[in-house]
Image (cartoon, rainbow, N blue to C red; front, side, top):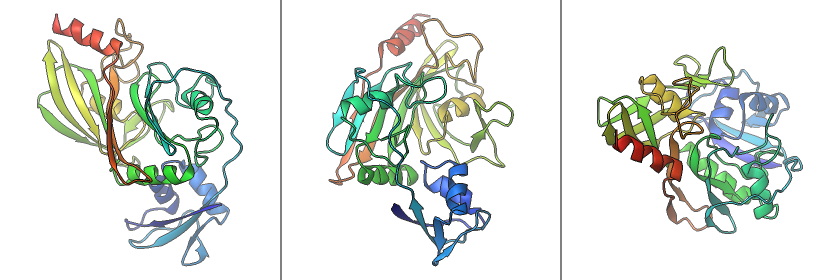
Length: 303
């Protein structure tokens, strides 16, 4: 069992919502199960799932030991940008799913990591997601960090929570953004009718903040840099669509037809900064734009 101590920073928040917000590896239903099982205490007493928080409340959470890993190691080539005994950072290609799920039982980044790391990955995220601290979409390319042990995982999860794990993306959106810089501050939740999509939801959504800077402008399109302050599912895609400028090639939040030469949205996780869990050193990593992205830019520059 792995005990954690969490301090509430809001008044009147349901405890299951608080746990899901503070621990990215937990879904809200998983947080409710922990509460129902008595695995969450406050001042030594078990907490009900509908109990409310008060600022300064200290909760002790007992996370269960991870289940045996169900995903199987597979010899899939990886573009490793950095690796040591605690963390591994890879440049994920377009089309690779991060972890096994319905419809994608294997051939994922997790399968490749299990083979490459010889089973040395953190177990906090359970049997199908060992080592996974954060995710990027299947059709998004770029940098993704994974943890090789629970010590590193907890450190990186804390950095995700306090926004010190810095992630910078580059993207092409449809249309011309009015301002050269801007911020989208709009909470995101699961779409109310389409469970495969996310949506801006000011009533039920979790806080989501994206900062953007225009890099180049073309007739009908804009090349931009996006900096994540939070990391919600599909965050950049949802926020840009909210502005009326969906990402080029995004058939979920934008045009229904794919863009020639793109397998999905034109979005690349270009830079990643984090504090090394063991050494305390601030590290910044970068990977070049992939061929599909540079081909799109060349085409747009010649419009």
